[in-house]
Image 1 (cartoon, helix red, strand yellow):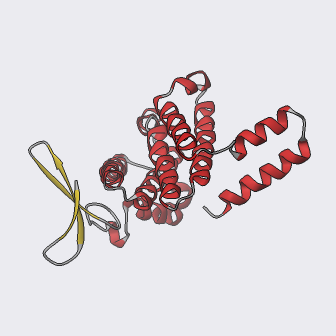
Image 2 (tube, rainbow, N blue to C red):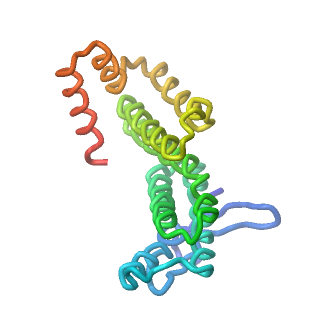
Length: 224
């Protein structure tokens, strides 16, 4: 995987695959196509959903194009992570999650919806990982662990939504995020995180302190 300049001077990404190579644009849709003039097919679908109102639905052609866009953004997200371009990886992960939300809301059937929903923890894992690594690059390990804590809470919500809470602690992505968090704490010799302090305060029934800690956590994530 590499980022190079094309003959016309624009930056592109290249990913080697079996029997060939994929070349992707660094902005907009990875294949460079602008569906009906929009940056991505998702942007086009959003416009259609407003225009068509209650009659809007996803037919087979639209579902196929959504699948295509999922696949393209997956490839580019992997490239960004490999190249340590974490803000770009985070942005592409968020695009995929937003498209997942849209697809779930308008899915023509539950099977098609679950075909994508099964990958939600994987995409969230990439987003959380990228967010933490951005903070580490800015020399803020405490903020990095806070991003992981927040991400784990978001993942808990996904597992609860699908009645899969019993599998949360054994999930590969959860384990990897906890290992990443523990590694940061050990490497930078950090004290208890705000989340850990909050849990301790609630357990000790120190509700005034708990409220203060919760406000601090909200302030930390308010601008992100």
